[in-house]
Image (cartoon, rainbow, N blue to C red; front, top):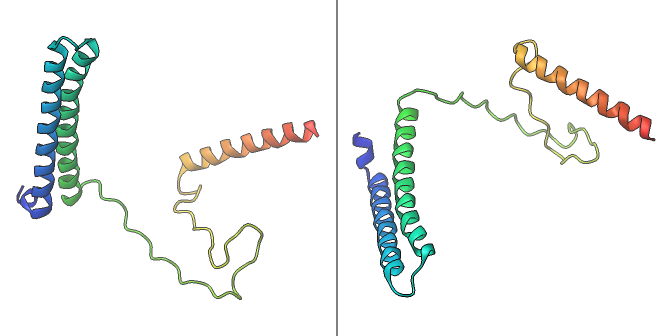
Length: 140
């Protein structure tokens, strides 16, 4: 909990508190406006809407704090990134239309042999591609 008392987090806490106070004040203003002779049902709707925005801001802030605590605690950590490959020389780059020189497509992170769900998905995509190709060839 001490991490939420740093300067960055305190500035965030202050910003959220100010935003909530402004939203509640706007709701109160709409309520008074609705009760005035020129007010109407729309003002009552806005009077109820502003406090909902304030609750949403608080819920979002609390969820942000929970997510930050979870990621710093080691739960649900993303896999470490692989280092970027060294940039190829212009002579090593295969020149094909539509490709940017010096860039290559990334290697897949999982192969169909490693993941049966991925293999099933790839088979489904291949079947859809074959069906689309067959329909297009019949139309020509």
